[in-house]
View 1 (cartoon, rainbow, N blue to C red):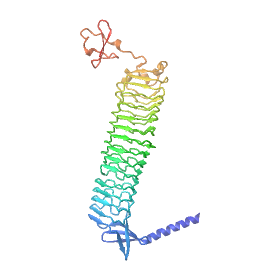
View 2: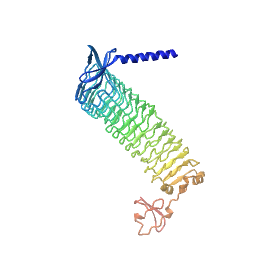
View 3: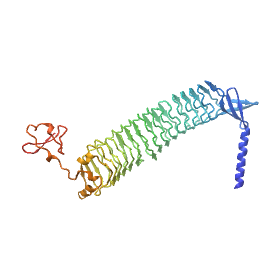
View 4: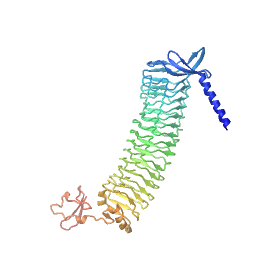
Length: 482
């Protein structure tokens, strides 16, 4: 074993030494190079023309009568050339390394030779004026940040060989309104197309992975076609696409990340994937226009803030197998009716806070816990029916003080005393026996008989509208005015 290690170290030493001996420096009037005498190639290391507006890289250099083709452009070799507008790269180049042209603020266009198979990390980042990009026909991968902060790209081709777009590849860059990624592309990395202002993305039929924030913050994005092959959608994948109108998920998804569609202001309706049994937290948080979504019955959990501030969500079908509803899941939505499934066990804190259209509620016997402020700020909630003989745990301010004072709590007859003694439930003034309030209505005088201001509601309060009850001054009979 020791002999093997010694042989390996010796071989590595010989290789490093031979490379050091074979590598040499060379300069001409424009560039500095390193060339390899054994492998017969040269690499551009830097330029002497720091203020040049145009540069042409030679296809070869000749040293002591020996020609060395220029096949590489080194790490950050031509970066920070703030005046450079045009660059000619010879067809001999097969590799362009990290940051090679980064921070070339005035570079207008670039044609990358066909032998280049990978655009390295940060290669053209911060090329603020870059408007035309000709990618090589054999390109396989665009690495992280390759075209980050390129704010003027109007023309770009997508080679059919491209398989991966790395993280931040086009972060905060301008791209054409329509982007159709090639059929070979299977992966889009984290924040790859974040903030590009693209209006429509067409994803290829073999794509399997969409990374964290991959298509987030595209303020003009109106549509995206997701193929059935997509198996993983990362956290915040489509976050902040304020013009996105509708989404159809693939039939089979292994993972949907948190906040995937958060702050998609105009998202109107969603076709949910039948393979998903959980709605992750904040999935549709602040999707103000969302009004239509149907979840399959096998969904068991709705995460915290999942539908919070979905102001147009007036109807919602709760899956029959649903077990838990997370904190603030439907906070500040606009539900008018809530039909919980039998088998639901937990309703989180603030889950249905501020649903002003909610008038009645039935809580199934399976519910063991209701969080604090779960049904707070629902001014029209008038009847709450709880089917459990044992009072569920109810957090502080589970209902609004007005609800405690005016609503009727209906519980199993044998459990009335248990609810009157239970923490928080004891705040209800009326448990199974709310008086109608009619007996408190004073008899109207003859002059008041036709006065709508003297109408009363069922709780004996003066009615705010022209509909209500009044008491006949002679017979004390109740007269309904509609």
